[in-house]
Structures are given as structure tokens and as C-alpha cells.
Image 1 (cartoon, one colour):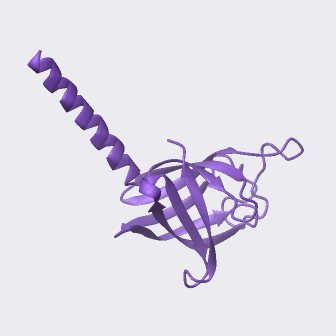
Image 2 (cartoon, rainbow, N blue to C red):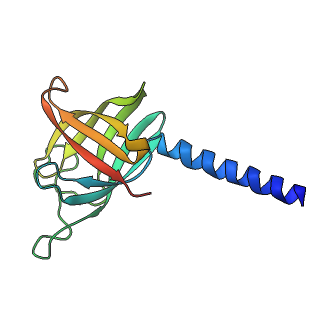
Length: 148
């Protein structure tokens, strides 16, 4: 009986530690929220590769009268006319204390690439993502919500 209780406690501790570790990282699935309308725009899967974060669009939330499979017609780099779903829009963010800095973010609607930084909020349930030109004070932020 004691062995069963110990095994249960150990399993609970491992599960809790894994959940805690994941919420202290920006890695995961995030729902982007438009900073102007407050409506969900997309699901972005953030992964880590070689110490840097990258984010790919997995799904777009589009109205019935909108193109359900848009391409990045405004992009000027290799992403020009490529499907937005599956596109990497965040790259190069590296952990710097409580923030992720030194990255870039693409606004597919405008085709523009901005410098970016991100900060976890609310115990890792929200990610404040800022795109800017020059200095962070010259930009705008979105708060993304963790999906899983």
C-alpha cells in the first residue's frame, strides 16, 4: 500500500513539474489576438530550435466571406505568394532573463518584417509579443493566449 502511495506521489510530482516547466517557456500553441479588434486571428505553434524560438501559423480564423487559404501577396522575400498557413512568422527569439529578444516577426497582411521581443505573462498563459522598428517603444504589441 505504501509503495502504491509513493508511486502516486512521484507521478503527481513529475506531472506537475512538467506542466510547470512548459508554462515557463514560450514553446507551445498560441491563439493570436488582434490588438486592434480584440478578435482571434490565428493559431501559432512556437517551437525551439538551437536555442531560438520560431513560430508557424497552423490555422487562421477567417470570416465566411474571406479567402480561407490566403497567400502572402504583400511579402517581398521568399514568402511572397506562399500560403500563410504553414508560414514561419516568428524567428530568432532567444531567452534573455524574463524576455525573449533579438527576433523578427512578419505581419503577413502588410508583408513587413519587424524586430520583435516577447514576454510570458499570467504564469505562462499569455505571451506579450511586440513588433517594432528601431527601438521597442516604436511598435505595437499583441497578447497571445496559450492553447496547450
